[in-house]
Length: 127
Image 1 (spheres, rainbow, N blue to C red):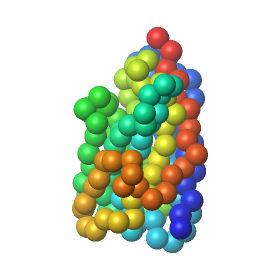
Image 2: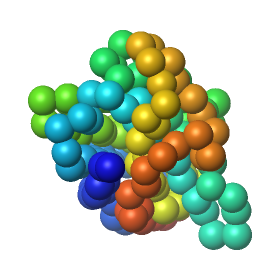
Image 3: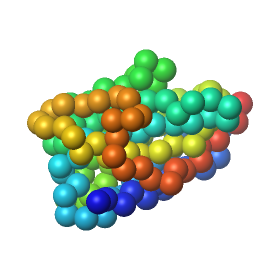
Image 4: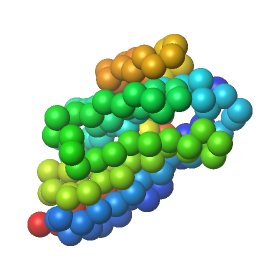
């Protein structure tokens, strides 16, 4: 069992930056691939980014590629999402999630493949 708590959301102007953090409880953080997802009003939750257990492999949704960077610090049990050049369409609740059923550098991008979820943090980008 792992508990995830996101922070760092807020209101930012278009073109600005935010850095989201997700702190995990428990001693087994490095066993999980970690993902970020988002859900805008009236839309389904969608994949944003994922990082492998050791941090050696990442993947991004096309809509954020080149603007967002996912990273992790296993010593601090924390995963980050650096968001630059924000657009109004990035407005959503952002969730971090942990995928326990992976080995090595395996990463997955589907919601139902993740085992644990945080409560979410709101990101609002004003145009």
